[in-house]
Length: 219
Image (tube, rainbow, N blue to C red):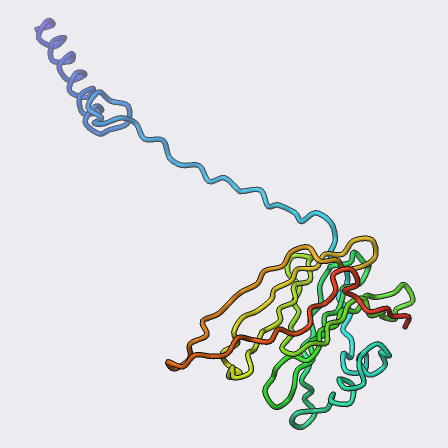
């Protein structure tokens, strides 16, 4: 009887061991390889290097009217198109490395919104602005692109409709030695066939001299 009791106790212990194996965990009946759970990791955020210059809003119309380097033709035509809205676009950005953002002003015609002049103003230490670039040619428009000044001029033939110029000149200017100098130039020729008709070769506007792209200004 003692031997039988010992045997039964051993069988009971074995049964409990097998039940533990069937319930998972680290038992011998776990199926498949162990899969580690992913650990969430915070990605480090990059911090911008340097400090962008302060953006100080300006009255672009007043700036143009006070600027003696702006042609009389542009200043006289600088009038509201409807109500109090002037045909002027203004952009702010860093191009010349000043403590305040540079200002790019594009003046357009009221009748057809074609550019008539592009101007760049740089802030002086006393808070005033000086004209450091100007291009007064038909269908001109300037933008700030990653620290460069990019000026696009549409080229029209004598019979080109306004919506279909014959080409364009895209000139990139870069600030160096206290002035803008030409860095890159791209010429584009567009299709000259509109509605099945052939258009005459365009007459290109007089290009800006790269040796003196900015008119002298002593504001």
